[in-house]
Image 1 (tube, rainbow, N blue to C red):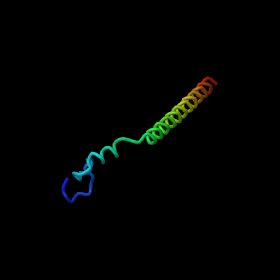
Image 2: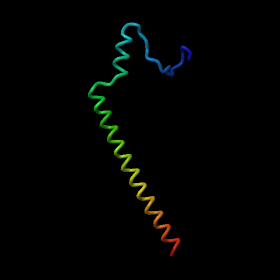
Image 3: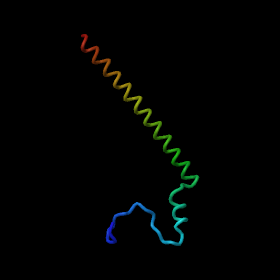
Image 4: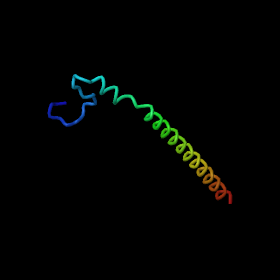
Length: 72
């Protein structure tokens, strides 16, 4: 990337003074953030599982109806 590029390099900015502080602050969540992330993840996984179960039940119902229509 050139000097005039406005695209990020994907590398942490370096100032030379407190690079270690920037990395520590931006790479590790606080305990509160970690708990919030965990809660949101568990909630999302539960919703996904519920959605998949509902879709499976709906597909089974439709395949059962299709079988009834073919035999009748």
